[in-house]
Length: 303
Length: 243
Ligand SMILES: Cc1cc2nc3c(=O)[nH]c(=O)nc-3n(C[C@H](O)[C@H](O)[C@H](O)COP(=O)(O)OP(=O)(O)OC[C@H]3O[C@@H](n4cnc5c(N)ncnc54)[C@H](O)[C@@H]3O)c2cc1C
Ligand SMILES: Cc1cc2nc3c(=O)[nH]c(=O)nc-3n(C[C@H](O)[C@H](O)[C@H](O)COP(=O)(O)O)c2cc1C
Ligand code: FES
Image (cartoon, rainbow over all chains, first blue to last red; front, side, top):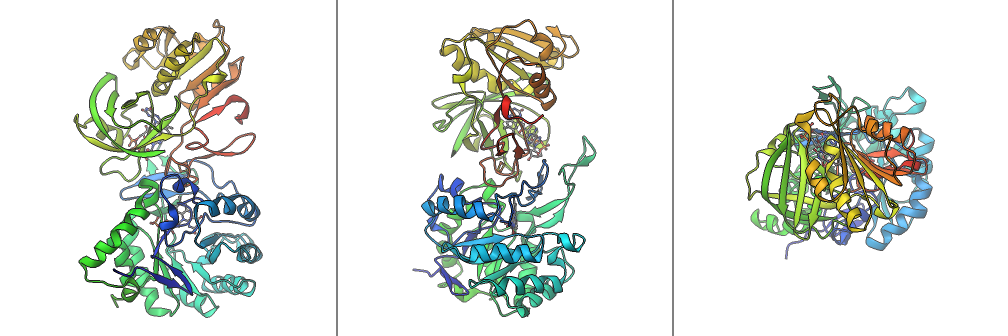
């Protein structure tokens, strides 16, 4: 028997497969299709203090080997997530979940994280710092190491569960941001969020996405994600949840060799709703093929 | 919702750029007219949403227009090709709202989902009237199929090259109806919304990431709640629409 278990800051997962935030809702759409308890964990839809409708539509554009989304963090707000979504999720998922948190000010991040930290179902907090900072001219928290460190400190000060900071790849030096988060007390890093992209409709000669730009993800971004995880692994000691373009068991092994302790799978769920289950079933076979007995032993193996 | 492998039984061109595809496979999860399926195409990242035109236990009929690369590729598939399809998506039309004399209005490739609806309404003993709107004579399809179901059928064309000249709304005024059902381009839906004298159900389109409610790619605001076109729609009731 091969060992697929991994540990994220003390949270032990049966396997490293985690559906990525925004692509798995609050779980129950997929629970109609298969028993989602086979997942290592899952990261729920980015949740903010207040309810958000998000961006105008069209929010989706197809790309070769990927897609652009500009959902804009549509969610019912943290209170409704706790009163309505988490109880429903509990009925179909008995393991700990990852609470993905978005925010537009330091206070908002701290408050939302504090509220979710008190939830027994939540195993760790994943703080998405790709959102624009409304108090700072709309500049993203995730593109400035000082701001990234500030969010980390504020959240750490009010929470007890492990805090993972989710990094944006739309920066010159992602290593610098990751180090700033580690220095500020982050327990781990989640990376990468989507790459800023665009498609133009030749018939209308205008951008397809109503907001013009959106986040590009899917198979095409795997090499970018691998490179960034590899670089950050060299620079920090805290665990990394690696994601970006993963759609096969082979991709999972590759991402772990680059330095990821666990992985998330995003856009691939939307095209093949069974992809996480299929990867989990395929992992032992794929490990055997490369003479691997334990997944946790291969983390960072490419260095 | 179910993921099923379907096999193409036949495919034929029925109007300009419009194809009818008949597939065999398990349709158990299709529970209402106006639902749609989401088709994986080789070489394309996202699936393609297409309305259920008709179905029985092991057969599915789709009608689609080639508007881009994905639908163009579909039109070239040989009989016997296997397709990975998510079936039974969306809410579909509610026939219990129809009253005795429902009016069905379809525009272009908004016509297909009304076919199975019309069949169901006739089977329930209702007397549907159908108005099919197209751009020109080359675009017209399914007039005889609707007639064969026993419905009163009117065809309108924008350029007047076939049937009544004008839009579906131009053919509506003299008809007495108890409820309406429609699917078609948004300007048509809006025009119907404005001139209709009864309540009705309208089917919407949006670009989709998943088609089954997971990504929030297709959200819209209604008077009562935010809805996902793919899961809480594509059919909305007139009274909840914000226009
Ligand atoms: C619920 C629903 C039911 C539909 N039913 C039918 C039908 O019965 N018959 C039919 O001919 N068409 C139908 N459509 C529209 C059909 O999905 C598009 O024409 C098709 O996806 C175009 O694909 P393409 O690759 O040829 O075009 P491209 O423009 O190359 O496609 C690029 C991307 O945009 C998306 N896209 C493009 N146009 C549309 C559109 N109008 N709506 C949604 N997504 C779009 C594609 O799915 C793809 O992801 C329906 C759409 C929806 C949402
Ligand atoms: C439709 C969609 C919605 C997303 N929403 C969120 C979100 O709410 N919060 C977040 O941190 N990341 C969000 N993401 C980013 C993913 O979690 C993931 O980081 C990214 O898509 C890269 O992985 P992938 O290539 O496997 O999709 C979203 C991605 C997609 C495709
Ligand atoms: S397309 Fe994903 S929620 Fe509707």
